[in-house]
Image (cartoon, rainbow, N blue to C red; front, side, top):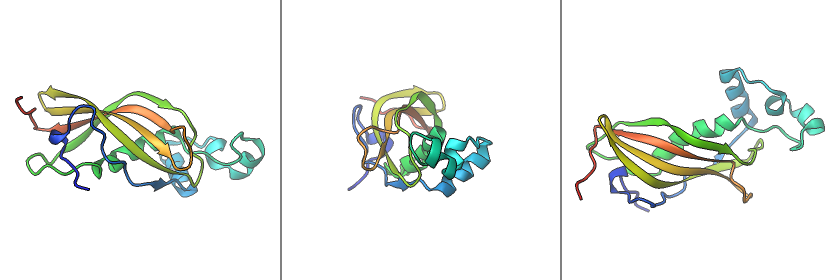
Length: 155
């Protein structure tokens, strides 16, 4: 499948889903180490087996969020004229279903808005993190990506 560049996308157009990403305990532990968030529900498998409603460790919600930009870059074609794409932020993020250790997630994004900024074109994507084998998504949010230096095509 040929991917489009960001400037070729239409409003309400869905990008091809990202590749599946398996979330391992090593990933969760590294995130805990980087953030200082060592809450037992993330890092203590034995305690989770006894006390957690999920019976296993779960990933930090923000771990899912931080995986989105890298997955996103493979969901569209590079633009030879504008090489810099910046993560501009996230709006209205919600964590709907825990990502359990060894779950696989992928991101599905739909372009909902494009705005001309002085520094480039700002793209708004409604995005959800799907969990393989489950109907409820792990996360939903609006991710903002800036294509630095770009200008909106004149219609």
